[in-house]
Length: 389
Image 1 (cartoon, rainbow, N blue to C red):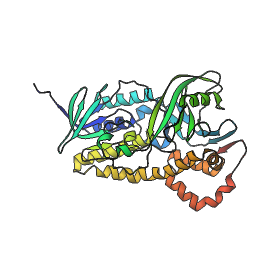
Image 2: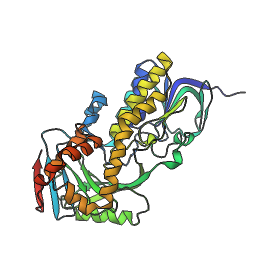
Image 3: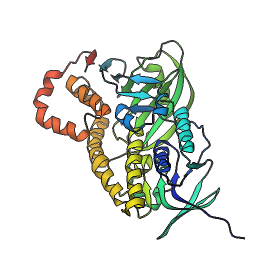
Image 4: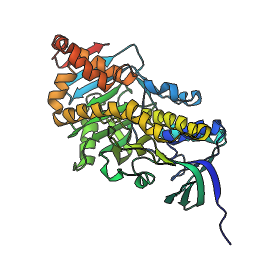
């Protein structure tokens, strides 16, 4: 007896922010959608959990109640001797606990009449002229469009050209309770402890997310570096890590095409991550938005999915290529870069505007050309300073 094959307009592999966003949008537009998620929710997702304010237009109002902290500033440090505190009247972003945020997001998807199957592992994908077959441990499914939203280790990505040429970094993160000190509200980025990268502390409602980002793989003793950073950071007197994990981070800024006739990639699966800050949630929502528009145009107008890759290239990847220039320089020369960039009020202002979307990497490069002569007038080389921007 042959196995019944269920068919959908769209199958989304992965139920993180990118996958849930596109599934929610397409289901609300009347498309039959199936979400295949490898894990069972709620699940712990190692992630700093920072959402920059430029993401706000894409986030459903139902999820904004899960913002745990509001970020209006950032500490930029080089060890415990040099601290620059950037503050602003604008909201730079918010903190979320990914375990709770992703579960609530998936619940919204279910309410929109999309079907969700958890604990579903994709084993093989076959793209044919009229449809895509998806073989899983939960059965065989078919769809007209397949969306890969399954992160840096994407199985869908392996079926598109360029998968082996991606640039991948590494992060190690833990969640820690604070023992002796009140939780501070602003994020911290440190450029001394972690080679070819930076350390971070992101405050949440009742704990810290603490970690290290490595632009290149191959760093040894990562766990020890993490523990030393927890003990030495100037803004936390003591903390106790209760879970931690290393994971890979893709770098944005490449020229890879993100679609075939019936497949496309979004979010981390498409390597849409800021190579300097490691920010991925904004690009998950942004690419999910662009992909949903392209898919609806595919169904309603017969347009090819190529317009999605072209828009991502123009609107995201071209700018992240400039981000790679900054990342390569800063992480290669961290001490020089800290004093050159974060002791300067004007450059700190541009960094803050990068988080709000007022500035892009390309615009920063242009500002260096147009206003570079002003930069020396904004330096302050004292050990500690605060810049109100």
